[in-house]
Image 1 (cartoon, helix red, strand yellow):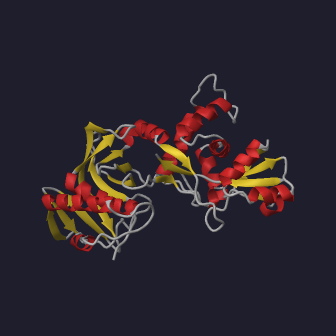
Image 2 (cartoon, rainbow, N blue to C red; image 1 turned 180 degrees about the vertical axis):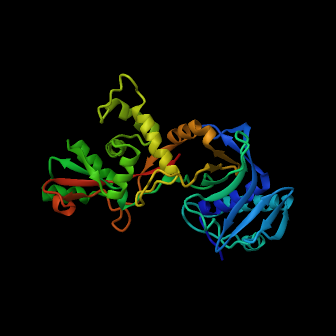
Length: 363
């Protein structure tokens, strides 16, 4: 029995809907469909132990790894299956809880698969051959998929590697440290520290690999992200575009913003794009977009739109205006942050420290 959460079921739903519709429209920064720009779906490739091809013609033709035709399915039937899947997903469990769709087993068998996702993928969630109306080429492209069916999806997931380490100034004695650490949540602890006049000095990113990834994007990105994250804890702001405004006012990196006021907006768009298309905290990032086609968004009503290279500016604007800083699980076995630490707990010489963590989530 195959189970998955709404995001995982949405990957298979996109596979079905692309075959049913035969095309996908580009979106603007507000996810409104651009009726004048769409990409024709020629075929989808997905697999488990081997790849299968799903040719989208007047019907869907399924080819095995030897390019032999093994099945044909009418577009009308795929339309009915797609609608049934959408109804099943919307009624499924919310959050990250997994569930089963009792009718799905027959569909998986019909499409020669036993998985919700393309298991032969790299980072892209789906591989599609499209007809490009701009170049008239027919490239094989990988797209990432994010779904608004259910809870809002994350753009960047947190881990212990994505902790940012700050020195707390002045240092806390043991009694003050114990008092703060016994407060209920990291949010309450940060508020207490801020209300009582403590300052926070960024020291480093907890994960060396993530620090390197950030520096690859921009040499100042660790400091920029540290300021962004700290402000999300110390203010009532969590939307990225609001936090960017604070960065522009504070100018923590001392850029010459008199000549260009968009330093921070541009740099935050860079990390959002890289996070969207492959950059992770615990894996070396070389700047290569694994999802080289772009992004597919499943809207709450089941419609799907995409961002491709030709509407790249819309994609950047969409990411900036539709994301926020969210706070992950702080338990020691998960991200392990939000407590006052002594210097010896972090291989520092002296002082008090705190780790702060984050994730990017769509709003």
